[in-house]
Image (cartoon, rainbow, N blue to C red; front, side, top):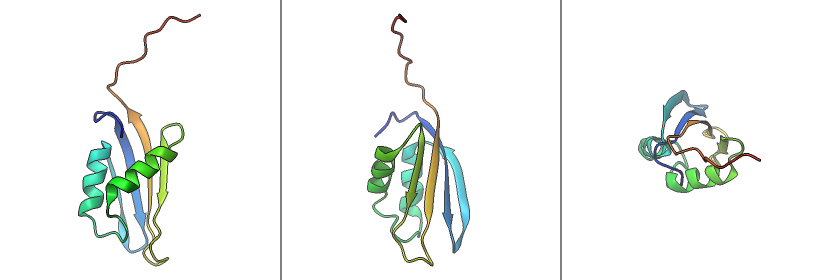
Length: 91
């Protein structure tokens, strides 16, 4: 996955639950999904890996394959990382 210090703002929308929003690492999101009762949220590691692989410009989106009455979505936005910036010379 990514550096453990990369922060994301994420939101989960489900038709049968209040929206859930938070800021944290992907490990925090994984823990939230594992503890949730969202249909199809387990195993969360696979959901996060798939969403991360499809991420574009720091934005991720996942739509569950649950029944339409229970279908939920996850969106995230990469906020910041404490990874050192590349310090190459500009030409």
